[in-house]
Length: 204
Image (cartoon, helix red, strand yellow):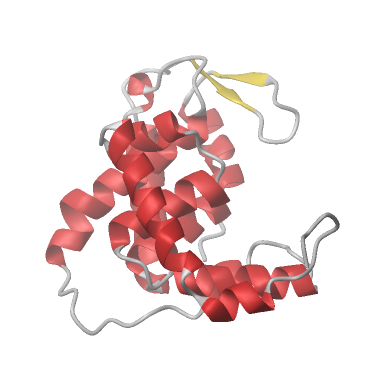
């Protein structure tokens, strides 16, 4: 997992942009590439998890995060002030995956990543609900890439349908159909359904 950025990235001039703080929700003015570099550090874990969802390989996830951060600094002037920085970063990572890394990979026989690797950086507690969530994520990991991608963005990262569609450069209807197909597949998994923890208000 990347803990810092390496390698120089120089822009000809400082590009003033604005992002939203992930904790306070307040907008923060980013003045130059050094500020951009500092802000990117807040998103490394989330970007790495997304890289794992796409590639299912830790080393490729590392490469995706590194390339995303470098490209974000190179193209800081393309960021739209007032929009969500994380959505922009996810779009960059997805573009790199589709256009560069995935095109060079032989996709056969790469298997599935251990769900513990994906959730190791989440900070969640080891509770019954967490165990059930891991079971769901393990099942999600076996979905086709397009469905897995949509599920992660909408249900894990909290993207709206529109934001997910913009990130993946597909119509919003495509996101909805992929989610519907994924829900149908997951609903057929009796093991997950029977293991789901009881929540107040559930019908027995």
